[in-house]
Image (cartoon, rainbow, N blue to C red; front, side, top):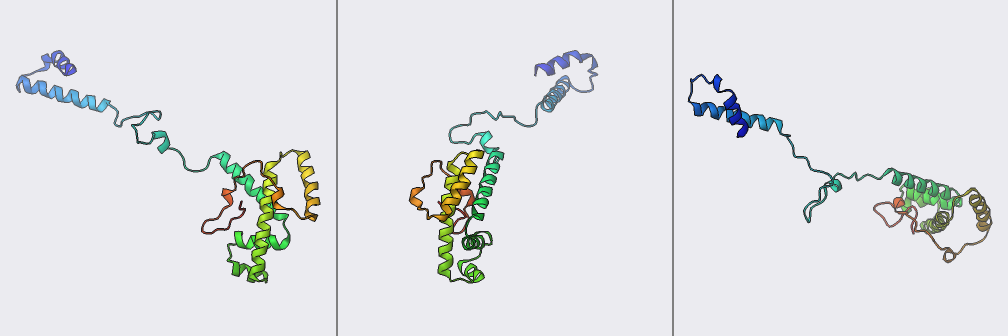
Length: 193
């Protein structure tokens, strides 16, 4: 309002009397309001650090990317690579059973027909293969990965492949994140704990 009155005072000499003075001043006030609205930002800016009211989500939480972080992608990739390497060391029958069930997503009956074995045999091969994978996965996740440790582990693995390993003798020191290997829609998983 003050800017409108100041503008009317400055331009009083331009008033030519064709309209009433009140109409002329009202036009100046309306133009001043329009100019003020044009200068004002068109949207309301809120800081990402703004603390919302109780019960509302923070703006930064609503804008968070739900996809995995680069670190999570690398961790999942390393776990997949580890699982693939450990699967390659399984006996052929167990490896084939796991491959057909998990990767090819065949049913027990279809996988048994493909391998030419009874369903019970396939189930036993799957159970043994998964148990060995879990055991090897836990051992791989629990030990440090230095060159000397890798060499020692290879020698120990060759020795233990000859002997029967009991699952109760294996202790997992580090909790193993194997959720990335679980499949939807069934009770079976690539590597189950």
